[in-house]
Amino acid sequence: MKKSTSNVVIVFAHPSNMLNLMEEVVKQNVTGLQWIASEAWSAAKVLHTPSYMPFLAGTLGIAIRRGEIPGLRDFLLTIRPDNDTLSSQDNNLVKKFWEHIFRCKFVSAGMELEGQTQERRCTGNEVLRNIETEFLDLSNLRPEYNVYKAVYALAHALHDLLQCVPGSGPFKGQSCASLQGLEPWQILYYLQRVNFTTAFGDQVSFDENGDALPIYDVMNWRWLPDGSTEVNNVGEVKELASKIIDLILDEDKIFWNFESQKPPESVCSKSCNPGTRMARKKGEPLCCFDCIPCSEGKVSNGTDSTECTSCQESFWSNIQRDHCIPKSMEFLSYVEPLGISLTTASLSGTLLCTIVLGIFTRHRTTPVVRANNSELSFLILLSLKLCFLCSLLFIGQPRLWTCQFRHVAFGISFVLCISCILVKTMVVLAVFKSSKPGGGGSLKWFGAVQQRGTVIFLTLIQAAVCITWLVSSSPAPHENTEYYNDRIVVECVVGSTVGFGVLLGYIGLLAILSFLLAFLARNLPDNFNEAKFITFSTLVFCAVWIAFIPAYINSPGKYADAVEANQANQVHLLQKRPKWENSASTMIPGRGLVVLLHHDRLSPYRPVTPGVNGEWGGVGQYPTLCNGWLSCR
Image (spheres, rainbow, N blue to C red):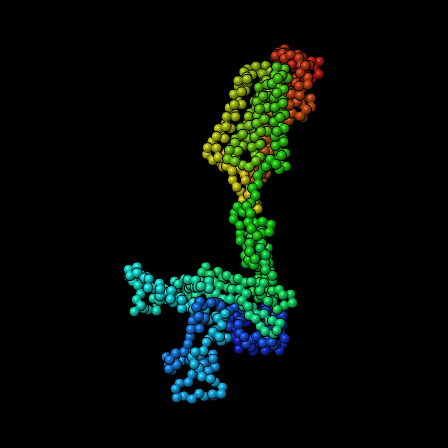
């Protein structure tokens, strides 16, 4: 005990054994300990000696529940010896009690009083109320109170037994027990179902094993300045019907035999706080452990938890790891920098296309607009606007309609734009072919109706692909918990991978076809040099498109949406031109700038006519700017 690091000692022993232990404790002067007493010696007055109390002061223990028995004192005061009790040899308890209390002797007729000088004769008229004796002290009824509860439990059982109605009893054949033939197991049946509350407020009932629900008082030894010992009731501990141990302590009443007057700490390891779990130290007592923080996704919301509990799939542990919180939803938002950048790019591109479209519409009769195939230019501008605007569908929390509409808008607007470029390339080749001898019939297959029809036909194919995809396996929002542990990625699943692949493959097919046709026309005369710029544009587009597919597949969550939205914004690369003389940045916006700034210098449009021997290229055969400083091809 002297070498132990523990300073709390729990002793289960008889008072006689406790005396032997205390002799050795006093001999070796083992101080600074908090003693916990079992019921056997928690109220033993034999230990309340001045030699033991410097060590035992502050002892805590449990004792049988103290109670009050209503009417017991009044009943004891009515006890009085009578002729029957005095004459009976078998029932002489009252006689002995009376003689002990009043220090007298009952003498029958013919008997001499022994020790006449020391004892007097009992008359039976002595008054108990005037005598102070421990037999009348009812302030500390403990075993007596248990006997009182046992008698009342039996009385309640007999009462319930007598209330039994034949034909609805609990025994075989719905019979009832009879007092004349009462069996022990029958009274035990009713005892197990007893449940009542005493006048002192204690509940009396039994568990499924027939054991009474225990209730004990918590006692505390206080050493008073005069050397006496006072044992105070500082709480209670009881077991409820729900198997819960209920401990009630009045800490202000507890006397602690330490200089700090505070409860001692007797632990090898301090309690583990919420958010941690206990890990036993190998080779050491059970009270020695380490506190290990819960891992991510697990929590413990109580002290001294032996394990951490995993959060549900849609929840995650907080920083303290003491409770689970809902996972945050992640998607491409309008308020984050990436979303703001894409939104700005989309709106800027849409505004630019709107401005150019307005300029072309207002000056649609000028040679620059008409020579640039105005109808296809308007369709390209419209498709560019749609491409820019559809990128907005990839921003914000995915909904069912946005998941369905974003890919449809993405695919159709791309095909519309590329179809216009493809037709434009085909027209360039047809014009060049018609300029050669015998090739004049080529242009009849590429008139305005054929161009318009080709664009519509190619776009309708993509629309049919999109409708089939939506009907068979439509894209839908999905909460993905596999990318990250601490948050949920809200994304649009494509539904049918085949449908999405056909949509992207058709766009790539048209782009490659445009590139091949433009590449074949790259060496045309300067009058047809638009094919060179289409070649360059489609080459850049194909490169971007090839890079887009693996980037889209490998990008998780909102970054996949950002890649696809950025691809929609990149479609204007189709119109990139390297020569400043034709455009400052893009073909159509550049020509719009020429029309806006120099429309007053444009000569009226004159139809292009073939020269001598059917050749093209003579002066005056193409519309020109006045003063002839920039050709209008």
